[in-house]
Length: 164
Ligand SMILES: [Mg+2]
Image 1 (cartoon, rainbow, N blue to C red):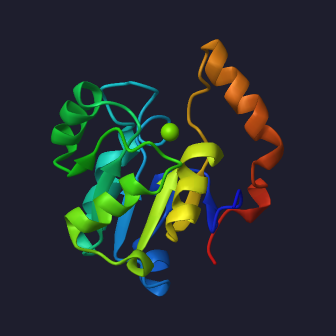
Image 2 (image 1 turned 30 degrees about the vertical axis):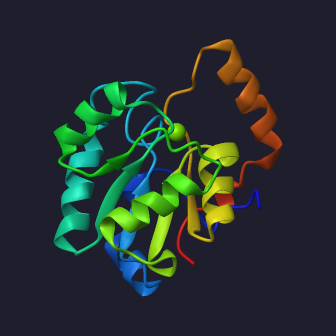
Image 3 (image 1 turned 135 degrees about the vertical axis):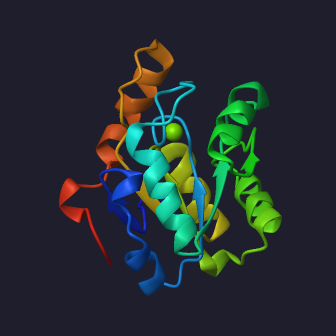
């Protein structure tokens, strides 16, 4: 339940070959601390090129965030991607809605995110393969630091990074 199916340092380390080898045709992507800083308007530098590679390889991508439309919509439009807001991860419904929107079956998808308690548990509950990526910029707010402290003993080892 707490354990991701695969582990990578960052989303953009995931190759189209790895996805194809595992029959993955679509990615359900977290945003905050996965593609940008928490609530940041600009994706990390590596993101655009990686998304272009995914597109060229025929991998569908949809953003699935617990954050709200005013934050997510402009970000998604910048990347020209479909999105689900207020996903309420770890509840599985946001992921299910995303799959429905892009017309992909559970077994053809993987969900990527930086939080065990939302992204990974949510994907595992939905029956979708989960890929953990390490959070990019540590949050400074007290509630988030508390959450991260609770999560710490459950974090996968960096030795797990890479293919399956
Ligand atoms: Mg996140």
